[in-house]
Amino acid sequence: MQVSIACTEHNLKNRNGEDRLISKQNTTTPNVVNAARAKFRTVAIIARSLGTFTPHHHISLKESTAKQTGMKYRNLGKSGLRVSCLGLGKHVAEQLMTIAYESGVNLFDTAEVYAAGKRSSLVITTKLYWEISSFSSSEIVRAMTHVINQGMAMYWGTSRWSAMEIMEAYSVARQFNMIPPVCEQAEYHLFQREKVEVQLPELYHKIGVGAMTWSPLACGIISGKYGNGVPESSRASLKCYQWLKEKIVSEEGRKQQIKLKDLSPIADRLGCTLPQLAVAWCLRNEGVSSVLLGSSNPEQLIENLGAIQVLPKMTSHIVSEIDNILGNKPISKKDYRS
Image (cartoon, rainbow, N blue to C red; front, side):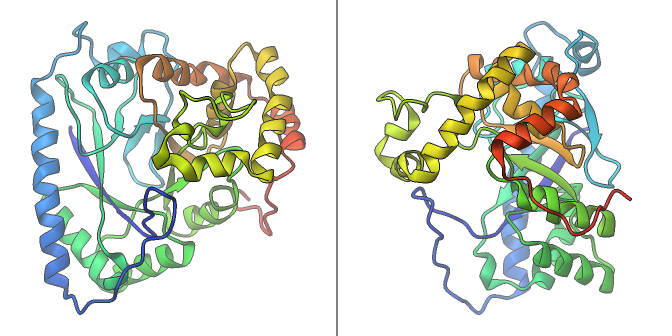
């Protein structure tokens, strides 16, 4: 079964990391629906094209998972959709998709899927980059309900929405008998914890919204390559990533690199790399349905997929040790697991 999930995104940022200014327009719901319809025609074609691709070793997802990959599968929020706890984001080339698929990954967060294979259990996600401030929650929920009712997607979720905005969308859906979102895509890594560890658990228990997280290595900051500054060959050295370089060389960035050096002995004890430790740390949060990897080459992807082998080693003692080094564990007023 091929599945598409529509994710709408708030607070779009430009390449410099700055919020994009969005002007108000008098836009009606049909415009929203038309935009969604055009986008999801593309997604539907992509999903169907996956049936013609055969992985290099002609291996099925079930067989690949049995190859002792250790891949885990979790429900996306309280929906019935099962996704691999590690997903693949960014631009998905055939080689990367094949490596991920044969490692048990069934979640691909992109509309640009090149490849593929005879897939029977894939989850394909995409985003609609609307000028969101022009639309009300009612219009967005109505548009997504139309997309699903027309068979262009099976679920929809949000990305970078606040808890209040998600609750409003849920309330609108329930009031007018429409379809509510099933997940929120949020940034989550060692240095970004508040939303995923405090706000989203409340939403999960109240309305069943799950968490799909991205940037587990904080745009490469946690990769370990910036411990002694910004190498010339790194992403942060590029002109279009000046914002990332400034973040790394800032006072806060230098403090983060010191903490990463303090975490390195833990990674050594566990027999893993620092990136693997960081991804496994994200996975240890059972409230996270899937962690999206942004690997840009086969070596990075294989390394990051290895985090699944580190997950069983993430004991409460190890997690506490990491928390003591980071010193940024958010405080929740209520334990939503009770």
